[in-house]
Amino acid sequence: MEASSSSCPNQPPPLPSSPEDEQRNWLDLPRDVVSAIFVKVGTIEVLRNVQRVCSLWRNVSKDPLIWRTIDMHALGDLTDSDDILDAMCRRAIDLSSGQLTDITVDNFATNALLKYITDSTSHLRRLCLIRCYSITDEGLCVVAEKLSLLEELDISISNLSKDPLETIGRSCPHLRTLKFNIEGYKSPHIECNEDAFAIAETMPALRHLQLFGNKLTNDGLLAILDGCPNLESLDLRQCFNVNLIGNLERRCAEQIKDLRRPYDPIDDYPFEAEDDYGSFDEDYPSGISDIDILSDYEYDFYEFSGGSLSEFSDYDYNDDD
Image (cartoon, rainbow, N blue to C red):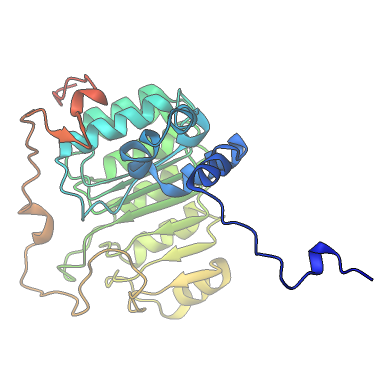
């Protein structure tokens, strides 16, 4: 019997696909699949490169679905100025067409950008502000009433006080997760329960709370346990004014499923922290008070990936709004 061509040992292998075929395969992907890929690629890469590949990808990159989550995090390796990052962030917000639900901003956020975010969407459920020293108590308080659907707030390394915590607590009844962290514990001898009392009095629905390096005492912790009865996880690492013994320890064990204690390891904490617990003679918080939070707003028409900054935004960068 004559062997079939499919089993013929002398049959040449199929020809490799050409670059044109590969491009066509990419372009033939369903739109929702391409959108999912763009989300994985990330905000910066889509704005800088992906949307420039072809007209189809540029068109897909304008889909608001892609921009429901905006991540401007871990930008330490970028050399762009704060103005450039601000413009990119605003461009991404515009592309979300009011559908933004989750945004992370690292380092460059200002009161003006925060107001732009909250003016552009009524659906925000997660807000993460990392090392955003230019955001003030007043700036966060002003926008709090526009965050009524907020479920998660992460403020790590900032100059903020209890005042915006109180305002957020009263304005965001759906808040379930709060991270309010400082840079690293500098002065164990200083005690302050203002943050703890603000949380206890205004955030009864909290389920997850991280207070890394806070100055609260046992009184503040008791207030949180009383005021937040649904709390499931509590991170008190480097909160060295808290002494978990006796009745307080039993209370935490009964109420909190996932408890991180003051002296627990900090290996998985994503920001800088001191293992030696600082010096009793330091003024608190030395790591924050000496930081120059002034931004350079000089607009120099920086060249941005083959195009000018004006390609992404014509916004006024005056932060007096």
